[in-house]
Figure 1 (spheres, one colour):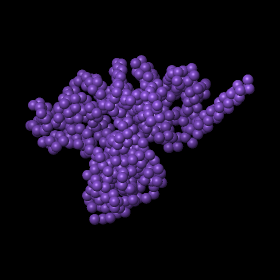
Figure 2 (cartoon, chains in turn orange, green):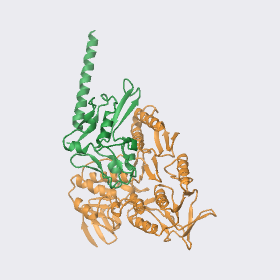
Figure 3 (cartoon, helix red, strand yellow):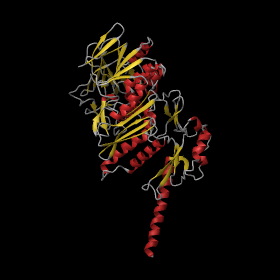
Figure 4 (cartoon, chains in turn green, orange):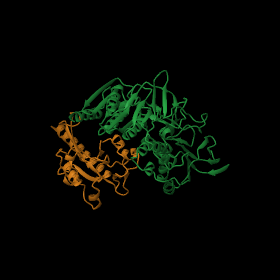
Length: 420
Length: 176
């Protein structure tokens, strides 16, 4: 055991950790900073892994913050790679890594990110089963693509799944997209909107199997056979890519000390219930402005804002991050699918379609609460901000009417789209 | 001090000269499907002004805390030190459209190679002390290049003037 003194410890080398360190230095933090991570790579963006595997970007572009050497030099931080943290004692302010390194901290940020979730089913550990999140995953998928598989089974019909589907399709590989939900983008798209997307994908030759829960995976001479629970049906392919969501990396956290639900609960300053301990990114359960509940909103931008907020507060510059709403834009197979807010919870919905554009807006308690847009990214940001602005005004409002600005904007948007 | 292009909606008549000047300066060809970097919107609504119509000339606002910069997954969008301009390194852009969803003003557009492009605040012009093309051409002087503080100061002055005017008129009314 070796004890090291470090005033500040950042656990995880994702963008939340990076932004925290940048914000600390930008705001005059002079103490030493240590970054501990299980990864051997520089700070990378998981979202870029599909772009790399598809050959759209170079390897170096996976790392938006540059090399560890550059980052270390610029922000005076000591990075311990391949050093997963095995325990955090928030009472004693003590962090231990698997290599036996121990750190006494004054301030600590937990930003250890998330890992792909894999179901406990027979055959899941087959070499022909792939996931997509880390640099290793990207390298593995890219190299298997060079063996020219003919058929790929993609399990999970959400953002990562459709990007895998796209990269396979562009290489001329037959794709079957499987999900236990009844339609594409089960969390982000309404059934009507999903039907439009599915129709377009079918025309491009994509096959779907919905309402299908993966039961087991058998290896066959040529690849794999996926069997589904409660069904005689099966799908054969050369390989399977499983992208059914992620879970926060929290194995080292002491649940008796820290309030953890799906993630670590944080306030607007990214503080946990334990003094000196902060959390940000995919492990942090911050505010969802739409529901006023705490929720993990696993988005690149959200993680950066949270990391920055934690960093400013650690450096002694008070800052608050009010929260965010779930939102996503996926650009795939020559189209854009945009989801803003929660499409499952509404009183009233309206759909407008013109040529390839599709706009579906949802209202709840007289306020715009969510939107699904296809091929209408121009106005997507304005819709998102109108929605958030409406929510902020909600408390002050006496009537159920939509705030004027929001009303005008939506009307303008629809008129504009209908003009073509 | 960091400067940006400000619009005074009370002066804008929606003539579109700024859009043309911008296209000329930046070699934009709408006939090739390239959208202009500056756009003028006509908004009609009784609730927003006396005659129910306003024009908004808009391009990238080079925001203080730019949501597009934060949302960009590759670091293609950055703030230029000194000028404070928000600039795009197209070699890093992957055309994911994340910035489109991040921008409250609907600014980002994409070229045929799926690379984002937007107003650069006429970097070449401002670096040698010239105004951006849109500001230079605006005969209504609705667009101006100034620091946020100066703009705020002007707005407050105008507000005070109109307040004084309104109260003095009221006094006249009382006398009658």
